[in-house]
Amino acid sequence: MHFYELMKEKYKDKEVLLFVDMDGVIASYDFGRPLDFKNKRPMKTNIETLRKVSELENVTLNILSICRKDYQIQEKNEWLDLYAPFFKKENRNVISKESVTGFSSAELKLNFLENLDTDKLIIMLDDDNKVLEVLSRSKRDIILYQDSELVD
Image 1 (tube, helix red, strand yellow):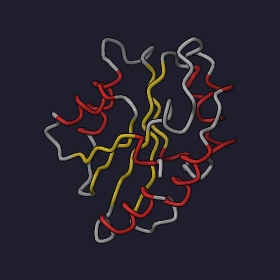
Image 2 (image 1 turned 90 degrees about the horizontal axis):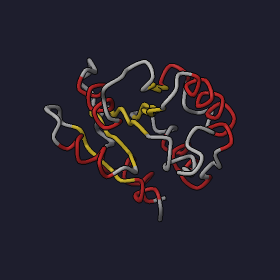
Image 3 (image 1 turned 180 degrees about the vertical axis):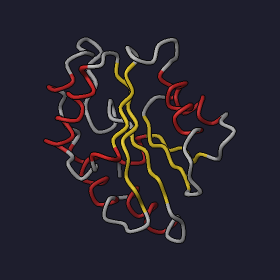
């Protein structure tokens, strides 16, 4: 559990807000069926690692995910209730491109993170290199990890 140990040791003296993408990180992403979220396969090893991270007292675990349609917000929440209920409902941030138009997924995540009112350390775990690249140019200090850190 490399990522768990990393979070436990490296950030033990910090209050951390850990944001996790869903598609491709804890749920499989099938490019041929991108609108069928409720049937996504759970990535059990990654979910188990994050469940363990959620038990760390200094870490607040959050979802930061983008979807194309408004109805998918409910689908993603239902999926989380079923496969990863340790992500508390109040810490689930699913943004629909149908409601917030004109922005890429990376821009939506950047705007969300830059507008947080917190002094806590912000960490983003994502599988999308474009998202990580855009977030790396943030005015805010955001620590970035690729989903490969979840794999031992």
